[in-house]
Length: 241
Image (cartoon, rainbow, N blue to C red; front, side, top):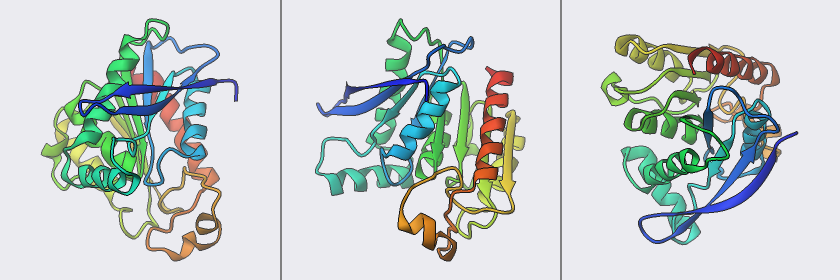
């Protein structure tokens, strides 16, 4: 990894300072674009750092906000974030907006546009937040998709992926395609028949290594689908930004 990283905090309206990590590219892209990487249900782990580092290596300054750092004790922090995930409103959206504004305010980044990329829970947040905020490109992966297209009205170009073996959300990629067709939004959404949930997340845990195939999500890292998704993401970014 050629990118460098550093920690910083962002003040929230409740007075709490949310922890974030910034990943800086050795050479920035010519798109004047920075990215918010939104973690999955496991929080700010080495895996989302790996993903943010890959975005930075491609030239995109990337911030990972810790959505579970919202001023309450840890179990309540997680509960609040998951509630925002289900209701579409709450402090998590303020946290994402704080990260977006911060990226635009850093002169050394030269960012005039912001994109978001999210996984699982983060994929759902990426969709909902991007319909509310001026986000230039959206990259959601295997997250929940709203039942109605109207919930995504205002969203920008979308590139994403789902795994067909995911028995819970495997059909949501097709649902998203229908929504975006209806809304007239440019998109590249692919459902991979050979994998399930979390196919881009390479968590080094017993669950993912040994038990993923036995869960309804069929959650397991898939290198081939992951690499194809990364190729599509960067090609899409080049085209639409």
